[in-house]
Length: 246
Image (tube, rainbow, N blue to C red; front, top):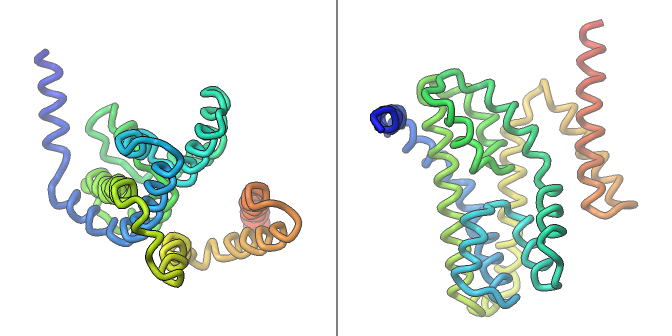
């Protein structure tokens, strides 16, 4: 019992308020992109027959963006639990590579459970923002900054889901121009994060991946074209580094 109390006290002392608040401030652009998409999910979930609390619970426990839309559609279509779970896991398998890429930037780890705490909110947008900015954060504050970044994004996604589930059909009454603009917010956010991340060292990789994806979209569905672009981009990075060494 004493050891548990000491661990909790250690955790509390590690969560520096300044770093956490700085991370929350950094999450504002992500939150702005998450809100309209989360509202759309709330609308879709309630429209599919889910109760308000169920829709919010899916966002609270899963927090996986597009995977949640797929999960709801599979639940409505009568797909079994195993099939739905396997589909969601396959859609998010890319996160296996996100963790190691960021973990090496965290040198100050007060608890063994810290990586688990840091992994829950590791979404695509959080990963991109962290990869671009973590080097600028002091080592002692990186964990708390990252927690603040995750927390801000998580609250926005959860709040947007609840707002969409509660508002019901109100969103459909907006002018069509605004409805289309809302759906473009998240892709625009991703583009902004990509521009911030794309330094000269990785610009060729991003270019190869983007061009491959665009060409593949002419022949393949997006679910196949995007992973293909990622794979070709990664292979080009390996080739580029090998050529640089030689």
